[in-house]
Amino acid sequence: AAGIGTLKARSIAPVAGRFPMPRPIAIEDAEGCPAFAGRVVRGVTNGPSPDWLQRRLRAVGLRPISALVDITNFLSIDSGRPLHVYDVAKLSGGLTARRARAGESVLALNGKTYSLDETMTVIADDAEVHDIGGIMGGEHSGCSEATTEVLIEAAYFTPERIGTTGRALGINSDARARFERGVDPLFVVPGLELATQMVLDLCGGEASEMVVAGQIPDTSRSIFYRPSRVLGLAGLDVAEDEQAAILTRLGFGVTTGDVWQVSVPSWRRDVDGEADLVEEVVRIHGLDRVPATPLPRAEGVAAPTATPLQRSQRRLRRVLASRGLDEAITWSFLPPADAEAFGGAAFSLANPISADMAAMRPSLLPGLLSAAARNMDRGNASVRLFELGQRYLADAERPTAAILMAGEAKGRDWRSGPAAKPDAYDAKAEALAALAALGAPVQRLAVAAPADGWWHPGRAGRLVLGKAVLADFGIVHPRVSAQFDVKGAVAAVELYLDALPPKSRKREAWAPSALLPLSRDFAFVVDETLPADSLIRAVAGADKALITAVNLFDRYSGPGVPDGKISLALAVTLQPTTATLTEAEIEAVSARVVAAAARLGATLRG
Image 1 (spheres, rainbow, N blue to C red):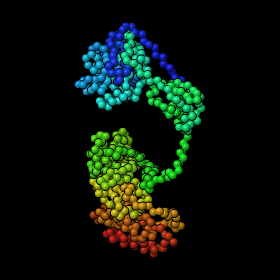
Image 2 (cartoon, rainbow, N blue to C red):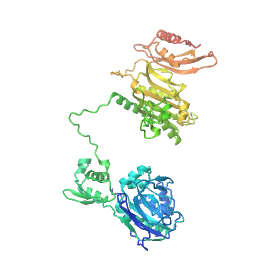
Image 3 (cartoon, rainbow, N blue to C red):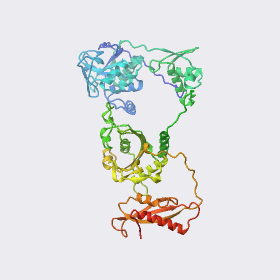
């Protein structure tokens, strides 16, 4: 239809019957099964299907079973015509499409027994039910290698009845999916002819005459169509002769005039009105040709605006993606056990989709941990994910960003040796980068111990600004990561977006100093329990006008350092502002640095 190739029309020649149909076909439920066609083929030999048929079935994910069954599966996929084949030796009398009776049940081909009721259409013989009409066949009348005589059934089932029955029984089969959406009613007889010919070709035998019970539904309809609607609805100017050619190639009948009359082919149950025909023309002409045209703004409608939180989230997404993290979108619903690992759910659903989606998440980390486990189970050696979403706490919904790193932080390399694993400092670096992108004063942040039990003690921290908690970071507790089947250390961050301080309205322009900075190193001996961050903050505050950066570059314990003590070496950067610093001024700043450290019990290392 798109003009790429030429359709190979398939001719379906009727198969002449060699003997009268020996088994009667009848319909007692015309509402559920308007048409029922069948014929018997005797003298068949059922065995493995030929290689070409098995290859085609495997290519679409189906398992070859036997020639007779493979034929029905092939035609269901190849021609959209579900069929069923019964072993005649296992039938008592003929077949009837009727309503199920109270108390009836059927053992289906999937090995499960289903209880039926009067709302369901079934195919039954004189003794029992053999088929849930249009959904699944029964086990008792199925074909085997001993089968020598078969009855091939091709029927049309009402889509509404199929949907109701399938939902009631909880069966999702290929036949149900096709009948529920509407198969071609005019292909009942041609489909049976195709199946008969394939059975004769692959299994041998001779066919009876065909019997058709009921009335094949007349679904013929015409739609009034204006070619100008393509421009009005899709913004494409497609010539009328091209529109007629497209619709004709798709199987529609076109009668032109001031208003066209288009007849819809029987297999297009989805085409119902003029807009559907516009869609057919546009998709063949090319959706990529539809121009991107903004709609005019109606008078009085305000221009679109984004809230400060939305703008911050957009900026955060770009920053985290630029740092090599992949965005994930996970469910807001969790299994209750997963929520319990993160403090428990404040809210549970009264009518959850399933038992595993009953709790509202108190944290974004459970979803990321589950995603990491799935990725690592599939061979992904390094998982770096982030997500923006809501946490559902007892007092409110909290906008949150979460980061998770698992597996290899850096791959194996001949220069660096074994693959490195993410640690708490990787998590801290990501947290600080994210907060800096959001405008938080990262130089003023303090590190405190985490308050929640799902963090690894001693390998996690909390970034605070005064009393406000901006983020938690570190290694997830091994007990929690093991609960989610994530192997190895997991570094993670949770950023609490609603706790960020309001940004300054004015950002100072960057003005690099004309004077060169200078650096001085200090090695302090401190108690091993003293957080390095406390020492860094104390030194940085010794002279806020000149000291622009303090970096920890060495940590040492051993000979030369008393027991219970460690040596922390700091590089202090001084930035002159108006004139080059004299030696006396540098010594004065150094003295203030030593004095600030001494207030924490630190002494210069000799």
